[in-house]
Image 1: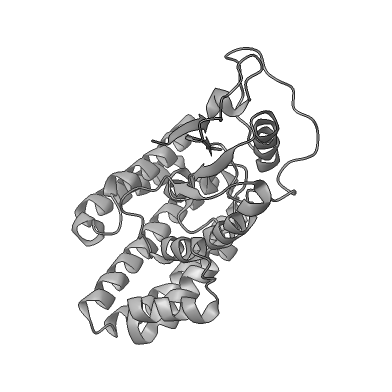
Image 2: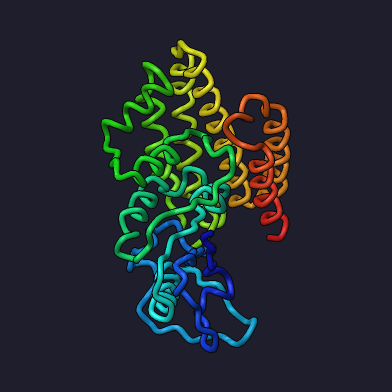
Length: 300
């Protein structure tokens, strides 16, 4: 039987007085950088600096907010306890819950997987919820293929979207590809609604409005039930994005009450449309997202 020793929270620092016994060959080490940044790859040297870490007092450990500090802690463990290490990561948990498409998850996933060998990590267990196919399943598909060493280029991505969305798949792919670029990609665990300014909010709301008609036309061209379902989910996401960015826009204009009323309407929309999105995402996740924005606005 294999056992996993987890490097997580306070255990991100290796032991000083206890020696881990790897002699029986049944102990693996699982590195779980729960507070890492998803605006950068795990091994991206731009995410942090080269200053040395200072071991904190007992039970007074501040979680790192950049990836280089996480990697420094991993290397301390690997030096103190040589063994077989693998990664437990959260691409489809916190960051996916908060940002969905405003973080360049596609780029981060492939960069992360490509760095595992260099970091001495032999594999990945991803902490994803059961339904992580909103607004599309491409990032999860990409992760699975890439872990098997099957690199997915533009042709493979275009094929995925064509199978999912049908003859107007280029419209769907263009929308998802451009969204992170238009919204900006928040880093160091900052939610997008905290990172946005009024100029960004105005730009995003206008961009989303421009995509309304092409997306609706694409949905009308869908032929199979699979394609129709994919378009319903993507249109749902487009509506949600408009609602939330409109609320952010109102808040940044100083119209706090209007922003809160918009979020209340968004909550009702999510509840009423649950039957359309249930196969792709748990509505509770989206409601939690709306609630987090509302709570942040109310405190300001």
